[in-house]
Length: 169
Image (cartoon, rainbow, N blue to C red; front, side, top):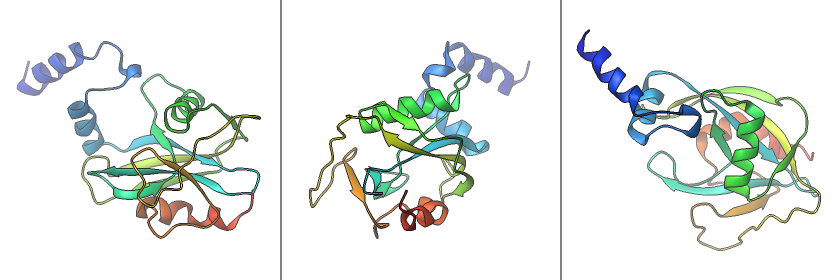
């Protein structure tokens, strides 16, 4: 058995259930050699505005983005949609049909730099309250409704999804 095989066997032993996620270094390695498949949630309110989340990390910097998440091994897209909705938005969502579009998204990073993204149009559940922030300086995880594409929208999603800001539901 070669060096790579031994190392990979040891890594796999440390990941009992990949459906629960991967250690960060393993995930970064995987995302540097194969595209990641993810779901993005285009959540609209009754006014047709789109919900965006603030992020500030080494991959994107301080920008607004459409909530989304990478599908885990053995997980369905619908499962990931609801997990993202609960984790990033704080409530489950109604999924309004099949994927609205599929885009190949690239960034300038080797890790987390190539995605196959399935965009799902969603709506908040009836009666669900989504806590949004109108602060001048948002914090990571803050949410805000937008009627137009903001100037500080993550560039890779702008190229893929800007057209959805022109549609009103």
